[in-house]
Amino acid sequence: MPGIIFLFLAWGAWITATFILDKKKTFRFPIAMVALMLIILHSKSITIYSIQIGAASFPLIFSAYLLVCQGTWLKKIYLFFSVMIIMLGYVGFYLLELYDPVWVLVDRKILLTVGLLVFGWMLYPTSFIYRCAAIVIGSLQAEVFLSVFFLKWRMPYLIGSNDYLDIIALTVSTLLTVHAARRLLLGFKKAVKDGFKEKKQMVH
Image 1 (cartoon, rainbow, N blue to C red):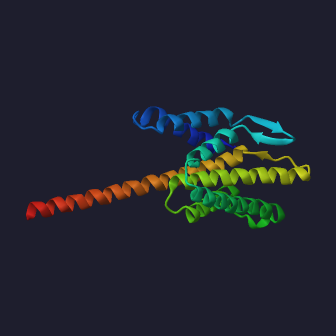
Image 2: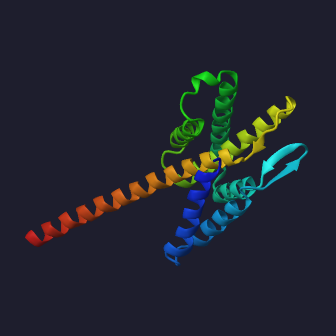
Image 3: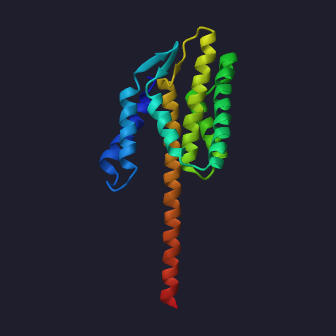
């Protein structure tokens, strides 16, 4: 069922942000609010000039732009080119699949998720925030391009469909899991080093 992965992860994000995270965390309320909005809007769509747009696309791309709007001009220029690269990769995959679907042996959701992860880490190896934002903005702009492209052939294409939400949910959750695991590992290494230092001081 398209959208079931997204719903599962979105509900998990909302429950975690609402009931589990420390109330002093500043990002707790925005995460809960965006997750709830996405859950409510995921099944709704609007039509603008014959282009169908999933309602969940609006809070998604707004949140992504909000995360990076305060960056320097140099960061914004780099983000622009990063978004273009991700968009071209996303569109290229769809067009290749349309032209020759036989070569897509693995589930397209998995392939697109892996592709977005690779592009994200190549373009932003250190910044978790910019990595997520670039993936969301680039993939949604690719969705717009595909919708306009298919419209010329009178083929309906929903921007931000449930399939797309599944892909983004898998991608962002994977990024978040790796980011959290890395921070835990760094914290563990720091604790071990501090422990060794304390032992050395006690010995001397």
